[in-house]
Image (cartoon, rainbow, N blue to C red; front, side, top):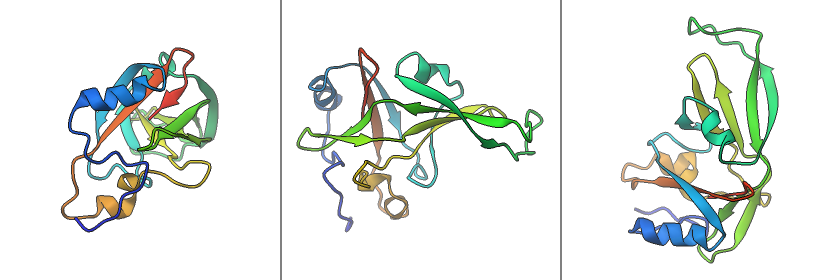
Length: 160
């Protein structure tokens, strides 16, 4: 593969124990692992679960409403109804050196008509993200399998 990854990509971790140790070093007590689909990137949100309660029971979130839904594709669609979202109060990517890089507006968006919840907005405050989460990376013909490991501390801070 001829694509340069960055300090937020943990390429080469071959054992889950090594990944969990990184989270433990940041006081994470719980972790969720997700195998990413080929199209999971910074443009196409990452599907996590059908129910937002998976997030609200583990992470410290602030609930808001987005714009009104315009969807008419499902029988359960409610055009005009506002779309719920939850913003992580404390969300950080951990670099390969172990440093935390804060993300101010990572969100969980609930699409009730499907139903499903998706992660969105991965850029740090310095406008970085793992290169393996980019659209360009996911278009590579020889793209490697990717996993998203999300950890949470007892107070609900998120480390990924």
